[in-house]
Picture 1: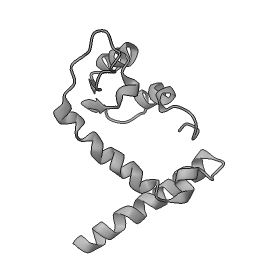
Picture 2: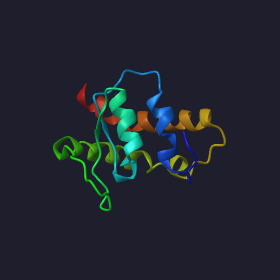
Picture 3: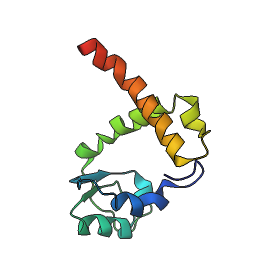
Length: 117
């Protein structure tokens, strides 16, 4: 977890080293379009789905069909940021922030689960 004003780009290495199953694809925005990141992903067996920056000399190919799924991720973050405490990061510790993040996720998820049962 990074600070509210820090770039998410700085958290790429810890994200890649998380002890979870390896994904097949990594969907990211143009901010992650760098040779070092693409190389690190390919070495891990993860296919980068990152559109090239407009100033890139040798544009790389991007699977725009798979990239469309990133919209769902962005909408999820938008819904979580509707909770003021999450958006402004009131909490001083990562543990309490994670706790309130889980509460926000449950509050979003619960109505859709209850209506289906």
